[in-house]
Length: 433
Image (tube, one colour):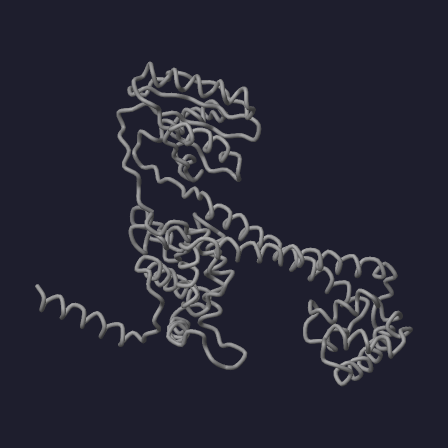
């Protein structure tokens, strides 16, 4: 990400943010403490805080620049207060501030000291500001992260449901292709045990299967016979768990509720993108990349934000946390290279999903991106599969950067075609020079 060039000959203030209060420390241009204190996260206290820093700006001859760590969300309120009142604010990754905590021999760790160290860190001139989204990007980021969280919750409850079914009703999943499908969930919700299936009226059970699956009686009647047979076997080999009469419907109800919430979030994500021309254009461009769908495009836009903040594809790769972490000291050089993983875990999760979709064989036997699939197979001959997939992920980040930077749709080319295109461009440049 592009580093902000900010003059050093002005006051700087560090803010150590907590849930209900924040400690601040203002340094003058000579790095001496001018004022320190606490601001409570209340209207009266924050109003008084604005008066304090305004007086400090008058006495020091310039408005101080504020430095704070990115927290879960506690820093956003102060960030809004300061920026709306004309103050420059730098929000940094806590990893950066943690790097100077051992500069003192004395082992002191408290909010007052942390506020001072944040201000002092600015003077070192190595700060890299975090990307603080605003407006539609902020809304989209919140929605996409909530989408991921709810998806994880559905997976967790589905696994719990499977554990109950595996114990009391072994063989149930052999009747249906997926446990979390609408039809099996509807059956388990109404008939949560082998005994309930055996006692069920065959006609009612068949009508339930037919209406939920929308495949008619030709689909439902054979399934009913399979269910009855599986229930008879389950009574002999499965565990007797009367509690499943309560637990299984309860888990299904939670899954249904989460799915309803997910549908609402999906609709809101689509609305945010549809109502913003820039986001809509970016989403359409990203979806030209094989493996990128509606949700992954929205998540990529939300997490990346303004592509102009990244000077090149390597900076974006680092933002994804996909750059290799280097370990070298004296004559020692680490041979096992790992990813840095120092930035957005959400982005790594999305790009991992896109990499799998684009380079792994699909159900129909084809590949979404044959070029990346061939690249992945070639890497697998030299590296472990996880390492090869990481290489694909980095390739995809470069593609994403080029598509968003140039505002042009993705074009699938082989390496030879790409080399030929570059050769032709260079030739034309030489001719026009």
